[in-house]
Length: 500
Image 1 (cartoon, rainbow, N blue to C red):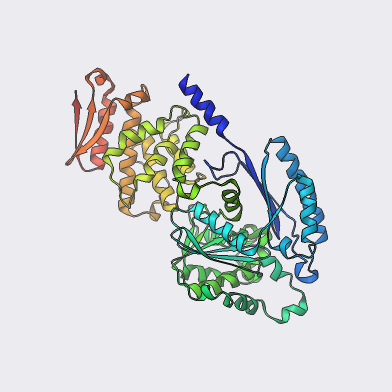
Image 2: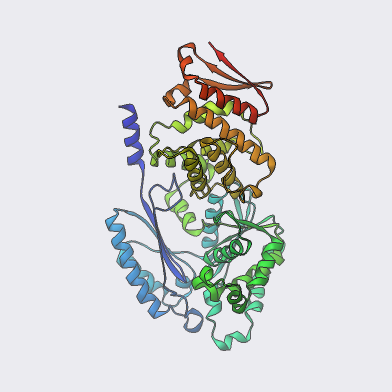
């Protein structure tokens, strides 16, 4: 009864909410089941309306874009009503705030949804984008650059604290649609003039440049494609400053993009890539970061943090996600915690596999669909690599996926070896050890996971000790002993079974 009550409490604690972003180029709606637990939307739809395409020419929103956007927004309203989402946050960015008819468009949208639409100032947009990036990384130090259709937002972040903010009218849609008479001033010069006006930017030398926005993501998709990088995950994908500059040179005009056969990757953003690379090159030269990192979380996520009053940045977001994920996949008894408590004593916190990754490994590798061992191992490996957890870096994903793989099959087998080249030998070794420890725990819990509460695993000097109550001695089968021996071999240790 207590378990059922807890389950019901978790179900009813889920609070759906939505955010609608009225951007210069596109309009997007995202619905979250419980943003506090998982920052991955259960609904995500975008429509390219280009309401800001005529802004430089007429000073007003594009009439056809506005007409199309109203149709899209009416559809969004219908979806919200059907899904019973009452908490909706709607905001507009550069095109609406700069257009002469922006206030009128705002009133039309408010009539559709019967609620207020927030028009973000440039600095507020920069702040929200930075909050979204802080949400999506374990530690943020550097410059956040959010490039949209109508503007470029910049923020300086030090140890997760936003110190400086700026907004510049050099969005890709706006620059691409500049009237011919204004193109006498070359785009590169216009970009340079705007960036040079930010005094604090010129004085800033940082380790990281975090890029946010669809055109940046497209640029990095190209890099993944050209390098044949095995992990097709954009969030926390990173390249060096030199690699970023080299990438810019490869795709700084449409002819190069066509010659590289990138059209399917770049899709509707092909026209904007040369402008985006121009902006990126100048930013890279001004602040000279060591690395460029991609963030899929930005102004929308930052808006939810502000509007809903969440203090997510101060919490362990990964633990929140794992708790949510375990519940959604049917682990109502929180077996992943039993596994974690059983194996944690034999692992110390270290850079090759930090303790913070043990719970995710215990939870995300937990699967039993009646498949063969190797089939389960491969499926778990793939699922973990692509799990929608913002807090996991690419390095983290591969280590956790490897440990999950070896939980389900012997360490003499390997998954696709191209991923192993992204880790050091020591990282691979400890992933094998964690996998072997989970394999032992799985063997013990074959009868029932409750026995993991009665047994304990520890390490003293160079010996791994499995302590077993005499009443549970039958659990220690030949298979369990074999797995204990395998774990001790991986950890270069002796082993001992202690009955009491």
